[in-house]
Image (cartoon, rainbow, N blue to C red; front, side, top):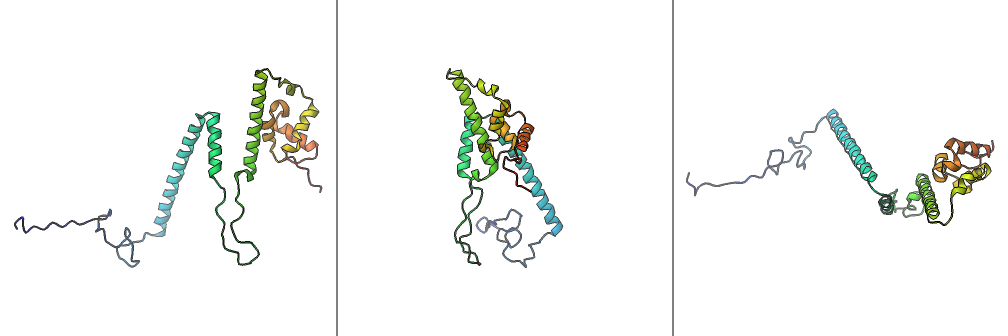
Length: 210
C-alpha cells in the first residue's frame, strides 16, 4: 500500500479504554446496556465507607491547619476574622415559599436565624466584651487615670451581688468566672454555691416552686 492510499483514522477513547461514545458506566444512557455493570450492595457500602474515612481524615487535617494558623494570629486579626465570617454566615437555609397544606401558616421563609440567637455565641461574646473592658481599665491605670485595685478589696456581699446580677442570668458558672475574673468570683463551684443559696438554678434564674 502506497502512502497515497494510507488512510489515518483518529479514534477518541474514554478514560476506561473504550471508545468515547460507548454506552456504559462512564457514559450511561441506557439502563439495559451490557457494558454498564452495577456492583453489588456490599461493594457499594465498602466504597462509601472508604469515602467517609477519606473525608474524615481530610477534615481532621483541615481542622489542625486552621487551629495552627489561628494560634499564630494576633487578637486584632482573630477579631476581624470573626466579624467577617459572622457577617457571611446564616445558620438556617431559606424557607419554603409555598403555603402549607393546612393553610394556617403564612407563606414565605421563616425569620432568618442569626448567630447571636445561639446562647453559646452570646456567652462567648459577653465574656470577650467583659475582658476587653478589663483591659481598658488596666490601660487607664497605666496611664494614670485611676486604679482598679479596688476590686481586690471588695466585700464578699459585693462580690455575690455581681455574681447574682441580672446581667449574668443565662450564663454558666464558668462563663461568669471568665467574665468577672477569679479575684471576684473565685471558682465556678463558688458561683454555683452562691446561686443555690439565693434560690437560683445553675443558669441564674429563679427556681420553679415544686
